[in-house]
Length: 305
Image 1 (cartoon, one colour):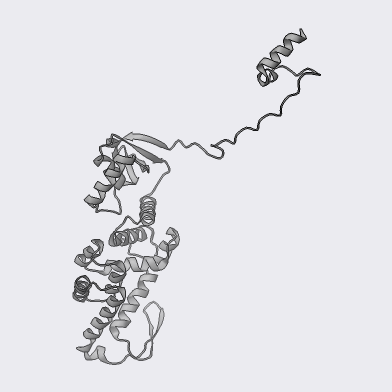
Image 2 (spheres, helix red, strand yellow):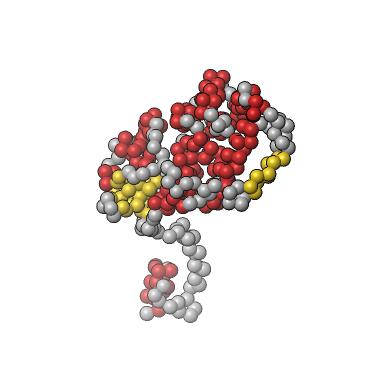
């Protein structure tokens, strides 16, 4: 009997010790091998990811309105070679009875161009207001630098209008520098043709910000032409704007007169403003600076688009 048990123990080793107690005086057992660490330790499976037919997803309103065809072709070729690396975030719109792109319309377009029949998606199940949707799209595009400068400014302006936010509140909510918001919103003062040149990349946003300080649209266009033709950088553009301001004031005796070093004003609602100006400052300088300050303080109009 004992001989048979010893033979079984010798033959099956650790497997039999899991169900049969080791007899006193039996062969000594090696210490158990430590289990390998679980490679999935800490991971939590999500049920929000899936694959869907590409035709089952529709596009909704997006801050980005222009898609470069060459850029889409390059992305489509990358998807053909390496597959779809990032999912498209979608939300269900009961009014349309369909899944609508929240973030990733460019990827969806490229997937269609690449000939994919199904795409990977991430479902966003929480209830979202129009403001929530736009905020997520703006943040995503800002992080990825996908929006053109004026597109981004319009998105900021729309988000401020939906929530009644000031530029400072928008910056705090999105976690971006207030200066970036102020400079972006300044682009909305440009004429449409100049704004189009900014989005086309002919004029850098930093130079466009300087151009926006000019109150007259004809001066803005003139400086924009100089920037494109002469290839002016930010510093040279700022100097050209100052020169243009001085040229404007030279023909106007009222503007030519020196501003008082300090002026105090009281508005109809009781707001008091003190202005301190140097000898070199003109009324145009004063108006431009006041406009910039107003951009930092005043929330967007509720019906601004």
